[in-house]
Image (tube, rainbow, N blue to C red):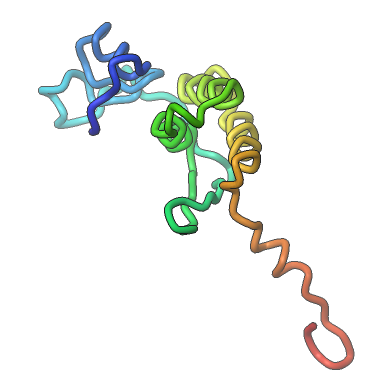
Length: 139
C-alpha cells in the first residue's frame, strides 16, 4: 500500500486505530496479522453495478468498478486541479465505502465528475447498439 499523505482520511484512520483498516471497516485487522480477513470488519460490497470507464495516461481506458477504486483515483488527483466538486465526490465515495449511501449513487457522481474533467470514455455500447439491419445487410 502506498504511503498515505499526512492529511488523508486513510492516514487519520490508521493513526486513530493503529491498524491498516480502510475507511468503513474494511481490512485485515492490525498490520501484523494479515493471515485472514477480520469478520467483524466485513461490510456490504461497494462495487458499482456497471464500471465507469475513464481515459487515463495516454488515453488508455481504465475501468473503475467500485467506490474504493473511485476514492483512490480521486485521492491521487493533483491538488492543483481539485475543486469543490472533487471534494464532494470524494466524500460521496467514502460514504459509499462506509455503507452510508448506495455505491451507484457515488458511481453517478464520479461519472459526472469524470465527464466534467474530460476523462469519461465514450460509451461503446451506444455505437454498437446504433447499427441497423436493412435489406442490404447491417449498416
